[in-house]
Image 1 (cartoon, rainbow, N blue to C red):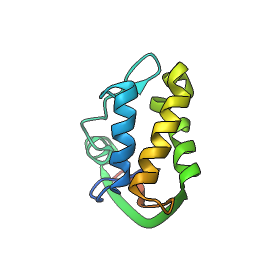
Image 2 (cartoon, one colour):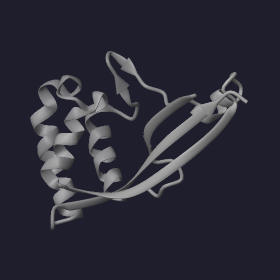
Image 3 (cartoon, one colour):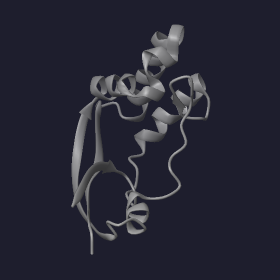
Length: 128
């Protein structure tokens, strides 16, 4: 039996403030999501579909949704933890990116609290 846990936003309405972040990030890094020295493309197939064709074709998925609340500082800090918007990707533009991101998010939500529904999935695959 194999079990895989992952955070997922499939079938969830994204929090509107995430678009604010995407707009600022695009201004600094372009529309393609970066990964190392190249770009990242999301897989076209779901894990469940790949497993269904494998010897572990009996696939079940369990899901848990929860609301995550972050402060402005946490939201900004989180952006720097992602490989596609890390300080290495931003280079000399890191401070300007942070300033613009803080301003855009503060204008969007002056109270500085940002809620997002996060989904955790456990994909359980066993041999029939």
